Length: 171
Image 1: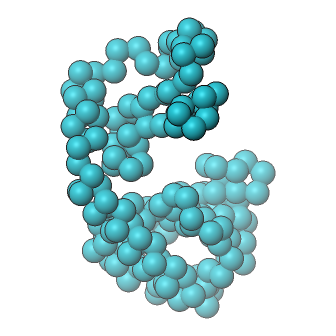
Image 2 (image 1 turned 90 degrees about the vertical axis):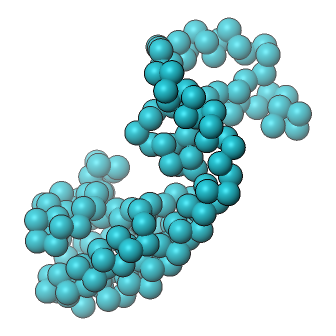
């Protein structure tokens, strides 16, 4: 990237594409003139990442075929959820273009996304994230579904959620 934009600052991690979210390992690329400034600001963020995580990260760079397979699975899973949303009564969503989440408006069902997600988990075993975790102002009206799991888990979750949402008045 620095070849094309010499002043670019690139921050990336192994979390999403490399399926290493729990490892908390990433990198930053800066122009040579900013190396000292970046080190000064980032120093407390990269104190002794475990050797195992560093080696796994290096290995992950060579796993393109497997990782592209994950991308294909997430694409299928996203479509499964998008196709299921009408049966859940969820018509208003943020476009899931850049991540593996669907952020859906549930204001027609509740004004308390935290309680709603807790009830959904208790009654169906499907874990979702309340919008208040991401937006303290309007998040009470939203729920976030992740499709970064195996396709069979997405299919199972949908099968559990459809009747549950219908019982909540979602359709």
